[in-house]
Amino acid sequence: MKKQKHLHKHEKAVRDLKTAKGQIDAIIRMIEDDRYCIDISTQILAVISLLKKANTKVLKTHIETCIKEAINASEEKTVESKLEELEKTIEYMEKHM
Image (cartoon, rainbow, N blue to C red; front, side, top):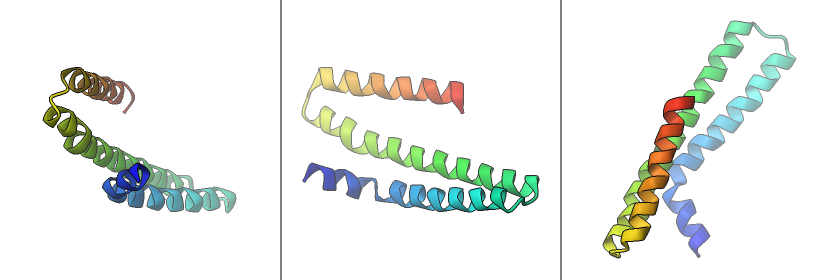
């Protein structure tokens, strides 16, 4: 049941990820077909953008569900833990994106 709950709340991110997967398959075909490098690069950048968008949706959902649930349950240690996880993720994004 919990697995289905997570799937529902991440439905939009899953849709973006499936689109990205299809685009990656198309990029691979472009490379195999020896297509123009700039066209390939443009498509790669489009996938990167889509992946960033999906990540933003996942993080937003995390804030709206997991963190809010911990706050509503008055679980201070859990709230602190969730916020630390989010801070680490944001720091990682700053360094690598």
